[in-house]
Amino acid sequence: MNIEQARFNMVEQQIRPWDVLDTDVLELLSVVKRENFVPAAYKNLAFVDTEIPLAGGEAMFTPKLEARILQDVGLKKHENVLEIGTGSGYMAALLAHRGRHVTTVEISPELKAQAEKTLAENGVTNVTVELGNGAQGWANGAPFDVIVISGALPVLPEAFLQQVKVGGRILAIIGEAPVMSAHLITRVSEAGYDTVKLFETSTKPLKDAVTPSQFTF
Image (cartoon, rainbow, N blue to C red; front, side):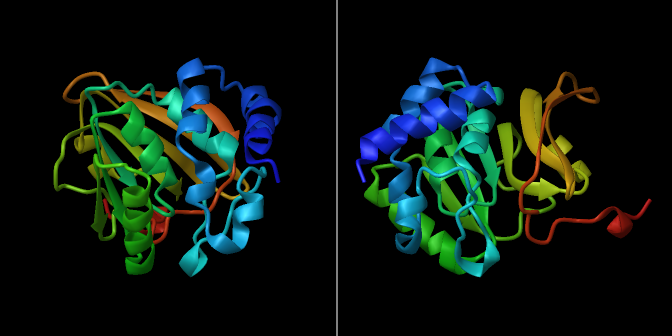
């Protein structure tokens, strides 16, 4: 396989047609090598429009979803990011190249260890991988400028709203299969939030995500 041709085809055939037109994002996809983060057994699928399996039943987002999230969250160089659901570490690496520092939380010790190893091997030094359950937020280091949740949630827990700075954004995929949508929630004041529905999609739920029936009022 000609890797660079496959990467070019991924961008031109999957990512651009999905309204990812930010040249900085598109160029970054050539800088951060996706194939380095894909499990060895699935290297041949590194540039395919599919969710690549990871240990413990987890999966990488499709390339177009990763790129669209990266574009739509509008990360700036000075901003600190919280990512929930490290997985392979690829999304954290992309975010790290765009922002100041990324704290990424992974519930699986196996995935955490692998992600740390892969990030180090790829020279990514501004990411901290934390072991824990971030399904209801992550207080350590809060508030953050940007929160990216790498897995679908039936509803967005209140804690996330409190853990983003005023002027900060949360990008979350909300809903239950087959009806899910990506939302960008901007904290416009101490108590005010502006929510924009970005696009419809479908992906794996975040492990241990709280269901509506588990909320107490």
